[in-house]
Image (cartoon, rainbow, N blue to C red; front, side, top):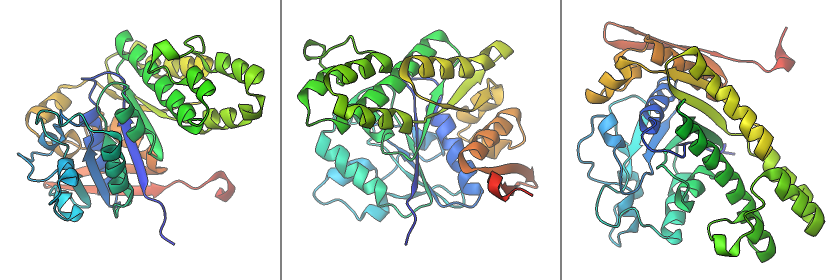
Length: 325
């Protein structure tokens, strides 16, 4: 039996925090470790991930899935020139390309789930609209990105909350009374008093006691991983721990701190030169930070070394505690 493909979604509530840069380099690192990887740009209407890979004007992209005479879906997979890594472009910047309806979203999700790969990475657009959140929620590993600035932290908290409440909403979509508690997309028809999980749980105890266990299961099953980008100081390092405490206190969500990436000219230069920083200098500090994050995601200790224009990867798989001697 074929094992389920691993889908890693990289999201965050705020634009301009480096999701595309981080997602691209994560995909490259995982591909270099030996997995077959597909990197996908799901930021419809503002796709720019191809520039990170020095791919100019991709011929095919997600928009082809919606055309009557669409090419074979296999043709959407663009060769990146990096071993084990394929790329699927977004919808470009054509007018209306960001406005895809539920049927089209489901078609894209079906396409993603049927890809032949070990790992698929989704670079999501900013914000908390349902398209972004629904793509995030199909992932088997959730990665939430933030920067240390308070505006980014607040947006990240809102993103995590929106993802959780969307999961709850979909689980109880046949119950209009519960929808008023968890679907805040229409404030005029919602109970915005149930902002935190504790308040929501109290309301369930009172009005929907038979569904309380299901609610608790949904909350317990949501375990996103957090990455703090553009760290400049020891104080910035605390952002991850503080955000974990925040989502635990108000949402009851047990998130994991996957790691951080320091602010560096090497990262900015790599974007300008359209050469991912992990390829440009795998032994730089940002690359070392990224390798730690990949290790957390793959449960394997990785080390990348560049010699004579070639990147060599050493990989040590971590054993579970039951196998330790």
